[in-house]
Image (tube, rainbow, N blue to C red):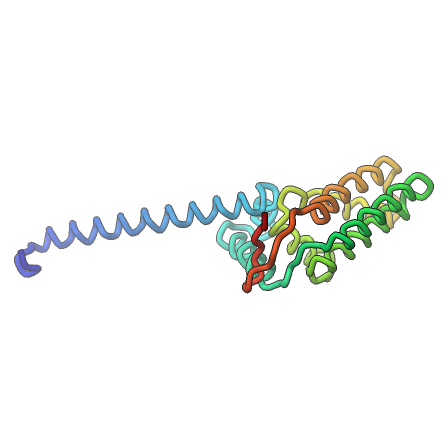
Length: 196
């Protein structure tokens, strides 16, 4: 049957079916993309982006931009020597907490910056560091944000010793995630691929 043999009604039905099927495909692709972002960044970070940007499309665009930014980095696993050095430094920071909790919190923040730099993350302002870390460390990004908020409270004299203890616990979660990550290599595009 040639196209000229189809009635206007048949053409309209075919067009409607094509539009509906196309709409369903777009919807399913968008839903799949949203679910991937929710898994990659974690529910809390995804919702944070939604609240900051006001709608799903803008929030997901920001999360996609973060991913592209981090994929452009030359991230690397720590050498065994660096790993041991950072673990020893962390032990010193924790021991320092007993005598000077506020100083230890500041040292923990600095040590995390040093670990990030050794791994290949640009160490910019806190918000950019947090955004960069959120791409590969969804499970601990909220800990990092909470620790930083406590450190800011401490700087203005509003954090209790218990708050500082919680900050150290939060910092430790990210520290362990960054230092104890299995060996990995960076692909030519900067993406991580675990080895072994």
